[in-house]
Image 1 (cartoon, one colour):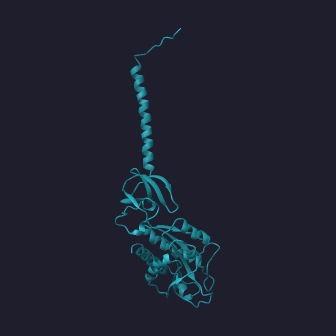
Image 2: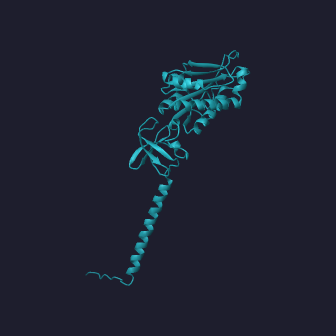
Image 3: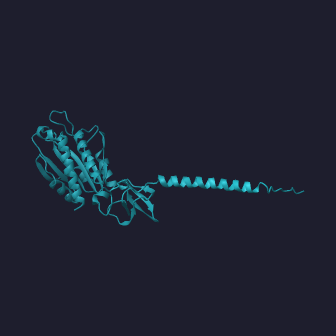
Length: 288
């Protein structure tokens, strides 16, 4: 026996309205979720960004992404480049430039997309060389000077990666592998020299090992105008230079065991002067 089906025509309009209302609420919720997702995506605050086919400043530019665009990040590299999708194209952007409101690749200097490794020598259990009175350690002042140089380069929109940013031990192998793995455009290591504790030597010097560092070594050396004696550019068989495939220099910015040099090494004014001159020379090197 078939059951009779009753249709309540009187309430049908209300039920249809209710179903439509539920559907509308669901669609609204989905819209809100999509808008929230869009807002959460990184936004280009710079005037524009280069979309490149590889995570480095030498690769081909696919197109330029204008200000205000939201980007979907697909993956990232060790040197802070992001692989994104934009306008049906996929490519790499320099992530550190995303929020730089005054950055425009058409007008900014070439260092803006460069990756520079700054290496404060020694650290942690490795104090480096000591002053003649044994009170001051090289590791303290390499970090102070390196921090100031890093700050100058960041102000020029460079991608600066420090091998250490505190008093901790980092092996020579770790420092060199970092530079090689991220394919740094430049590696700069900061140190202070020693004359075996007798204080018989003075001055600063620039060291390089591979021919690919000749240009930056000469540019940095020529850019110095310091109160200490210049020892010029020399070949340095140092691990961080020898094992580095990237252009790499090591700066010995005075002798720790020289009372004459130590007064400058400890001076904030001297550190600032070195930072300004090194920053200017690196900028000149990338924009020659």
